[in-house]
Image (cartoon, rainbow, N blue to C red):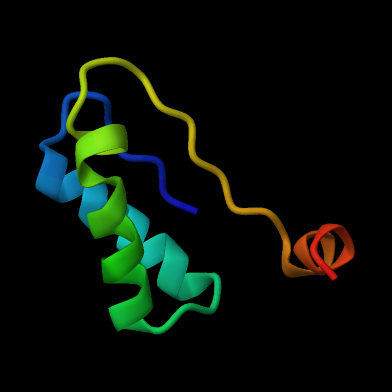
Length: 64
C-alpha cells in the first residue's frame, strides 16, 4: 500500500487511494466511485485522515 505525502494535492491523494482499492480487488469504476463519495468529507476538509483497508477475511467474519 502506498501512503501519499501530506503535502500532495487532493487529486494525487485520491488517485493513490483509487490504486490501493484496485489492488485490494475492486474494479476501477467501483474504486473511483468510492473515492468520489469521500471527496468532500475525507479529502475536502482540513486535517489528517487515516483510511485503511480491512483484509477480506476479517470483513467476511464481521459482515457475514
